[in-house]
Image (tube, rainbow, N blue to C red; front, side, top):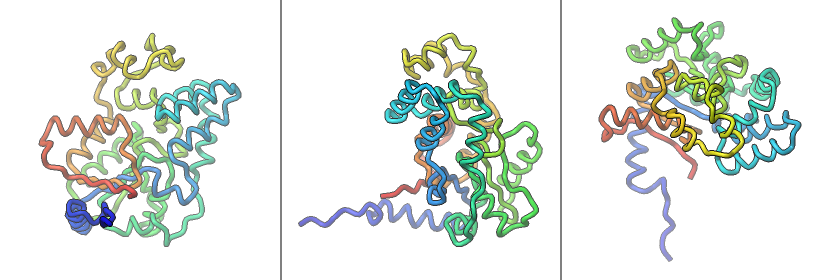
Length: 286
């Protein structure tokens, strides 16, 4: 009987594991986490979040459409239909209830993560668990959460300068790329949110936008007919993510690498610079 294949023990992944351990120990890496580390605390994945938010919709045909979109992996469109069907303040209220701080146990995963020598922490999730963990080992009177907000540009600039130039790890932050649960204007959830934050475009002004939501055309046709991919501007979201992938060594944990906009930026970095020198790691369950 052939020996069972173990993906962790194969030579290539063993070599990667040793490089990963050395990188974390060097204090030169950034932890990029999605919803994975927070699920044991009751916070939902992206799919479950959209499904839970859809309970705010009264029209069952729209709820059914959203569920079909989720099953098809069209999460951005599912969230877009949701946003068009429910008042924004109701979505914000439910997001707050879902992601507000819960009782934090120091021995759990997030506290262990902040004890490792990561330069900083980046997330697409809305919960504050890493921020809470940072408060438990750094000055509890300091706000360690950063959002991409025009009001906080000076603090964000200081964060980037420190990230690039300072390896002391004396002060570390949690950067919320897609918003924090208590700041509705910072939330990135749906297709139009992504287009606005990353491309600088207001999709509601596009003639084919309603056809997209009705399911008459798909995203690829929409982007081709509106020339969306050639109209984009370099927003602060784009610039920060591009800078992170270009200048830092990223370790992904609990992040499925399915985000089309982040993947597009990674590809752009590879096209602009050396694509044959990988410097990032991603950990997945076997």
